[in-house]
Length: 386
Ligand code: SAH
Image (cartoon, rainbow, N blue to C red):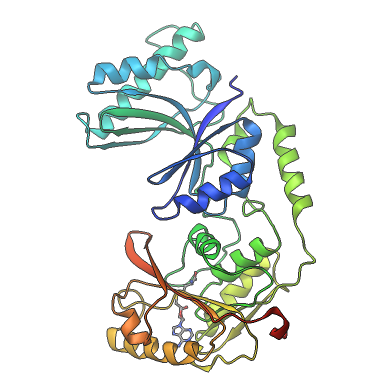
């Protein structure tokens, strides 16, 4: 079977550079494109990136790429790929997804059907199975995806299974949780380091706090879940086990962290605590019911990360205006703290009463949002009392 793979980490728009950095820090060279980070590697690379990438959506193998302007070209292109190096006899291989953008071929169900046919034909020949008799699909599953962009088809196999934002610790959520990988990416974009206090004053189910604690303790985000490729019969279990053991050894459970989450809603605090407990971080994060307007601290040089209610989501317009105004008054008093606030409200700065030092356009699911960044005044390290 195959030993070296062309790989792609898929990424939400706006976070490509974050994932690129993560991929490089795992030791792989990479190229960045819209929504994608390309790299190469072996099974160990697949295991490492699935386990460690905090901000990516999925890791996929690129089986091949070729022009496909007609169904015949698609069929021949798919048929020419070395499927026998990926799909053992008996493998399940649904064509799980087809997406056509700016291309002559646009009927996605037909693209799926042709792709399936072409792979079946290839495997029938390779495994000496009679044509006309369907291949039995009883073994482990390889989800195949086809993306045709500007007449170029890319054929991929998903290695992750459930999207990587699902870490496995979320037992409860509120009305509008942020995705775990987005929370991690925002933390990575921020100027928070594990030696600084971190507060999420609208913590909801606790996502930012939990992701920060995982980063602070160097715990692999995927430690609590499994991945599709682990079920593949030809994957060397020892390699995967080795990557998991190595991750366990890397974790630093003794690091001192100062991470707190507040929410006006006591039920959310209970949910946040349960999620933290599930992640094994119950004693690490302080969750407390509190209104953000009541947040005061003598600590210096901290970071606030907040994903407050937006008009469209949780509160009516008037209540949002008042909340953002009070937020401004409360947070601006904390001069040495940096603040990162994620909202879709275009009038945010006005209501908050301060122009952001930096802004970044992002998507929360399909909703356009902006990350408003306010940097704290510098303090000398010697002034910091903790
Ligand atoms: N990032 C969170 C979701 C935040 S939703 C997650 O991943 O789950 C916004 C949260 O702000 C809600 O839980 C809501 O209860 C809380 N909230 C609204 N008004 C508040 C206030 N005045 N003070 C503190 N929290 C508030």
